[in-house]
Image 1 (cartoon, rainbow, N blue to C red):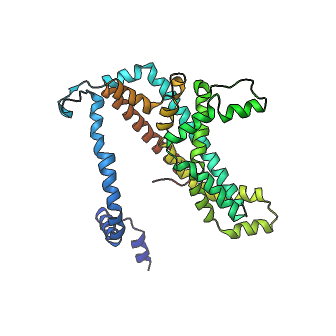
Image 2: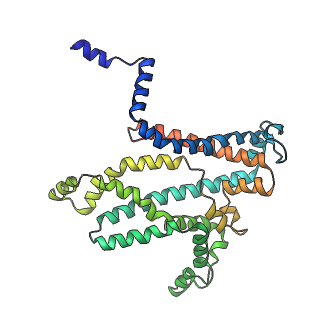
Image 3: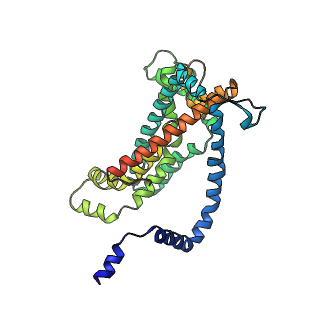
Amino acid sequence: MEQAVANLNRPLSGSSRLQLFFKKLLQQKVLMLMSLPFLLWVFVFKYVPLWGWTIAFQKFRPAKDLFDQQWVGWKNFDFLFSEDRFYLVLRNTLVMSSINLILGFVTAIVLAILLNELRNIIFKRFVQTISYLPHFISWVVAASIVSSALSPEGIINIMLIKLNIIDQPILWIGKGEYFWGILGSAEVWKNVGWNTIIYLAAITTIDPSQYEAAEIDGANRFQRILHITLPGLKSVIVILLIMNLGHILESGFEPQYLLGNPMNVEYSENLDIFVLKYGMDMGNYGVATAAGMFKTVVSFIFLIAANNIAKRMGESRLF
């Protein structure tokens, strides 16, 4: 008996692990076949284009073949990191990403908890539907709505004047210092309902007997949220936080591009718009690729670091 237990506890050799892997793979062949189209999509659209990173080390000219270009080494990166404009757009990107991350998490969690506490099912479904709808509006339409609402004749200025908060209309979109707040508010309005879905799903997995026991012990609604609902959401919050930190340098493109103008460009231009300007407008594809490569590498480092921190703290992690 002791020998059998010792054999079970003995670490598997490399060949045994390989055999076990292929055995499990064969047992789950249906799931593997279902995953095959997705894996092919990832390979074709995510890994094959990495060959394009070679442009970051070239003086790229569209008329020539990719490997017939003039190689310039790290000159594009040297130019990128010596460009003052790059640090400005990097600041804008980090600030807008942080605002979207914080507001996105807080508002989605709060709305999910409030919806979960509603007892009137009809009203709950009505609120859910209304909060989901903006997510399905394209940013072209959404940006037009935001611009109209914030125009001098828009509803925001009219309300503020009626409430005697301001004396004359404010050109909100024309002032750069207001742009980050406008963008954060627009992102919340558009995506908060959609972002609550995963939190509502996580709340449904919490054992209802915990709420019943807490209520019997005299816990009020706020205490039940604090000690049962939020701990039940902890693992989901950590996983989503890790995934979002992997996109810390991707603050978006469409809202900044559509709401941006020469009056607020010092606050609205981010890395994606910077890449577009250098690549398409100026034809400097090497610098544009170097900026995109920098964004990807930094995002990957953030993802790995966040995952390792969660691992050390004993929290849920991606891998």
